[in-house]
Image 1 (tube, chains in turn yellow, purple, red):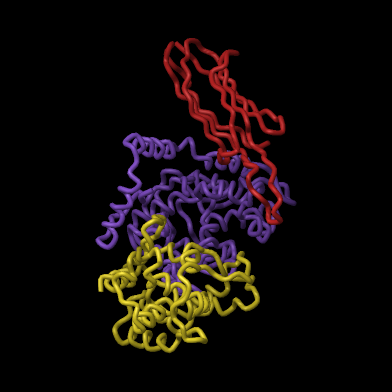
Image 2: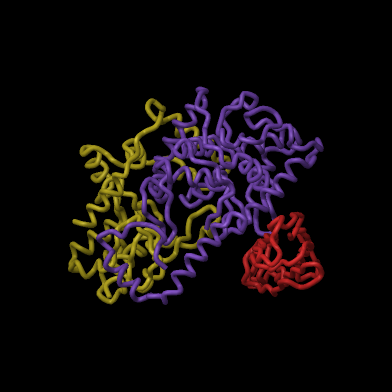
Length: 201
Length: 273
Length: 108
């Protein structure tokens, strides 16, 4: 509950609008698109907001209840699982990947997988003090929870598509957006839930 | 190393204290850290000052196909007036028919006065190791000529007001592969990415310190970086294609950020990681 | 080495016997020799390896610099002055180039 509260706090961080009343969203989109003259093959979609992104932008990440419910409902349908149905993977691979902030930028090698970059926003284990505070601490995540089927699935869903749990979460929809693969996501699930993972030591 | 600022939240206060105890440093180390911070704060030590000097020389040097200096460039206060101009940016320029920030206006002047195509300035705007950028030198000099003056973005003209509105909308625009908006990282106080504190850009004091300090000497890049580079870098991290130098979107964002920091003194070039 | 003149900060005047603080800032890439380029080749070292300061012909301060020093080296040191004169500074590049600068001080 503490974790959800912090997430809500962060999601709701809003600023008093200065002048945006009356600006046509279509105009904003047109200006944005026109500011990229060199778009690599296959990247055009990155410039176009999907429905959830547009909704969250409209409400400055503070959607009213009905809109929030609609977002969560939509994103719940936007989750893919590994083909073999196993939702806990390899925590050792994940803990290394959690440090990697590269991948899918315009200067990155497009053949390399993106890293999870969890440490950018989260504390994970005791030893690594170079962690960010944009998201809540995940230290001891597995200690606070029983790694039963439901918990594993909830953890997977949250990482794969954070907005299937919290509308307009600032956490990227890692799997749903194709940033991480389902196999990478289940490795992170293991990293959080496995009793052998440094997160839980 | 513990972060310089930030209140420790309930969630990880305990762990952080434990970590601090595990890394307990001898008493003299705290003094050394303070000494080091004081040394960094010495304005003379900032290599950005070298860019000011070199930028001033470059501003006054005839260059380009027209072999003319930039001394007649109109940065908004009349042709040839550099002092105080940066503090009153961004603004609408009738001769260009659009709102421009300092970086963009300098590139425009290079084309109009010196015959150096805008696209060339755009292409070479960000220095690479061993290859200094004229744009960084010129922007640093021009900004420094407003040192001490309050940030005063111009908002009288319709286009200026529109740029502000667009910039604000863009600041909160979620998009691309990681669903980031500028607000994802920059709409709260006392947060950090890894150990890098994040500026709260919708709060006047924090925004003013940042915007007033740019162009900034970035120690990790061993070069001065100007606002157009910051806009490019952020969009790069957000997994967008390369955003155009001097584009309407980047200028609109600079307008919004400058408005957020309105009143803060220009301190460019400041020192940053 | 660099088109930029080094920045020097020396007080204009001082009392005889006073200890003054001198600051210098030099533009230089300080390529450490530890980095590799895209193809894995070592980028050759190119640093300022020596900095000297003398006053009226007498050595005041000198140091050898190594690859760990970052670009645009900043030096701050003190000197006791007993007479008016000129500080002369020299920066020596790996390739042998020497950049010099000087600054006078009036001592009462």
